[in-house]
Length: 138
Image 1: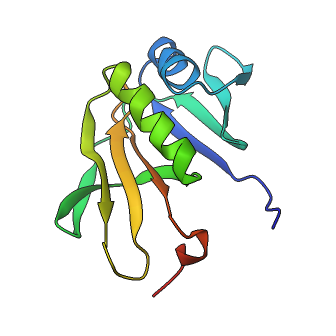
Image 2: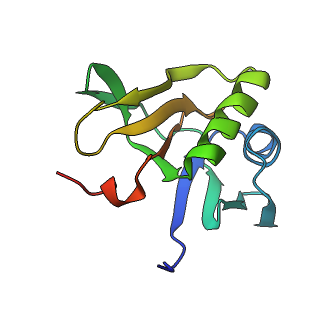
């Protein structure tokens, strides 16, 4: 099923670091930019990093035994792509907030997941499902 791409704009405290992380480490092609923002192709979706160095603190919530950062954003990838990205991030030396793992094992919604932060502290979750039909399973 084709779905329209989402758009997400979020604060960063350093556009040079954002460009290096999203464009370099994550491999997201860069789109338009200015001295105040940069947009990226985030797996077919548009994300925009806006320079806002005083954006504030972040919180977390417990989920399946992990301290999940809130807010966070991400994407659901095919399993092979998730595995390749996890390996790439390890090779790049990205520090995981929650290491690549499978959670909800044997339950509806079983998923591979990993959490990490960009250089400005924004939390990302990248996940994959062995069975994509389980995305919204209860």
